[in-house]
Length: 82
Image (cartoon, rainbow, N blue to C red):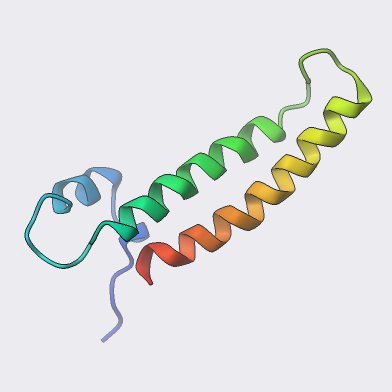
């Protein structure tokens, strides 16, 4: 029987489960989920066409931040259920 991933449910369902006395999800799963959410927001901003000033170095920094956030976000997503 495959375990249901916390990522497969709704955000509301996860929030409803957090205050329970059940051992899962514990504090680490929601922390990883929150970090993955933050990383997703960085990816969103990094993917925007326009930078603040339009300077090429801003685009370079945004692209680097987006790439790093994609990597970190993927790792955090895997930690949600670990």
